[in-house]
Image (cartoon, rainbow, N blue to C red; front, top):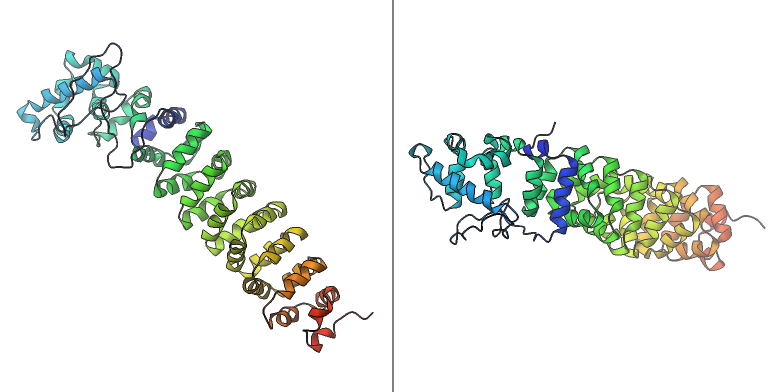
Length: 409
């Protein structure tokens, strides 16, 4: 059930239209407090130009109909003049306007013929307080529960002037299917600007709310630079949630879109369980693409983070060329850690998959003592096959207990 009043009112297309205007209409995105702010809009044809308020007073929302905004001020002033309204602040101030619009006496005043156009615009008289609060750029709605009575067209006209924090509030109030539809309606440029503008906490809430199909659609639609910015903005837990929610094809498309630095930042930020789940969902070609794109330090950190079973699954999934590239790119210490972490069967499969030249490079670059330790873990059949591929320079470093497994002839 949609809890937010705005969410109850706006359809996906309405919100999407609002966001599209928001991101393409040149509205400045200021990350400051309050839902709405800004100077009075340019005069619309057929409406009167309002008098500029003194410094420190509330100002109308940019883009709001100025005639109706002035009528809202008149309404608030008339309410404030009633002793029973108990408006203590100056009606020229934000506090005074908020008190007047929240007063129960407003219902009696707004029923007068002078405010018929205001009631008509708001749809019903009970929606007038919130409508006026939006028009006047007030940070709080007097009667949030009545916001659902406003026509969607009214909010579409006013919401584009809202600050980014308010846009975030709308998105985080929507249920998953509606949120996916809203974001899916946006053009690519608008979608990129909305997601890359949201603060980390709001972005996390939006992306982790999306269902798998919607999340995949959104992330695979974004250009590479926006995907990188979005993913590297997320905290580790949210990043893991997002990537493990994606279907395998979505994960593959997203990760293979990233450049080396962003890919490294994303994968090395993941906790071990999330990293394992993500890498083990990838098909061989995508997995090879991802691991061979990473810089050597990133490969080392990723592989040494994995537990034995996940590490074995990842390395044994790689095609021969990708496996050779990954292992030969590792510095000696993490390469030794990777090989000694693998279970015997996985180690045997990895080493017997490598051609002779990269096999010699991988084993020959191990720290002192590690070569015998690694080979000593191999099953007998795998050991014999590996020994038969090694050059004499490496065989000369081995004890006779291992050399006894060299194939005869």
